Image (cartoon, rainbow, N blue to C red):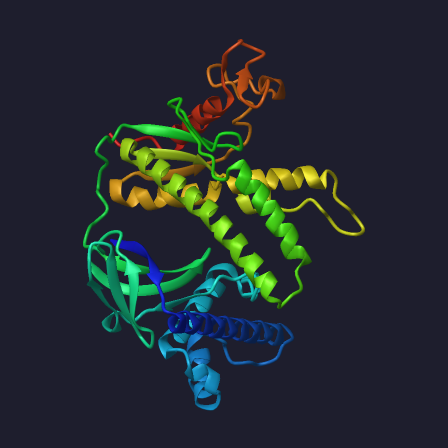
Length: 388
């Protein structure tokens, strides 16, 4: 089974400059290759005979370009080839015209070393270790835990204010055939006021950003909008904002991982609502000919949804399920918040408030999120009964 181990790097100034340069080169290769693929598809749609633009063709062209362009020689060849492989997979999975450009001010630098034979890890003390990466040499990092198994690849990325390395290892473990408690099931409702509510009546939530941090973020964003592009003041403000939002993302990821670990350890079947988070958080601005309504209210709802990490929680459940043998299924979420679990009566009036559910037909009263989680469990139980 593949497992990831992430560590915070302690780069020298020279190594940090190298990482920034490698990230910029990988971004340029990604954008150039994506533009080439899009142009090839457009020419094919116009009826022109063009060679199929795939990884093999672009890898050969990259090798030729490295002999002519000096700036391409700076970065290791295999991280550029890995960039082309990632682009090829993204285009096959999502479509060429749905893959996004890597904009300079939006994309966080990252690159992968796929050759495990050129990667080595050593421990130097109780809290220190070092990893050897091609062209970067030995890089120190904070030893928080020992990597388990055989290293397959290493990914260097920038997040917040620090550089990190993620070691992908083959730990030799396998997915359990059965769960420790094979008859246990739970339904989950993801909400805005409470991040996760279960059919057992448990409510999981956490404050990811304090009021002072929220006010500081608001001030930093206002300062950033007033800084001149390319100035040192703008760079400092952007770094401070990135560090602040990075802490919030880390808390959210930690919450999703811990909650998913608890649910998967206790239950053989976890039922989630099939939520299209990307569509649900789309802007309501509309177009110039058809302007949207309640734009500011919708923007506030979008921020509330994204702040709870709905999609991240789903990914965390799928990741933890590999260790416990849990099945994670998704069901249609339609009317789960308006349906009375005991009698099945559906009415908007049943949802008396955000947290109170009172059925107008039978008088059943419960927490609204827990009632929705029970309805989610009922649908998952019907479609996916536990074995035995």
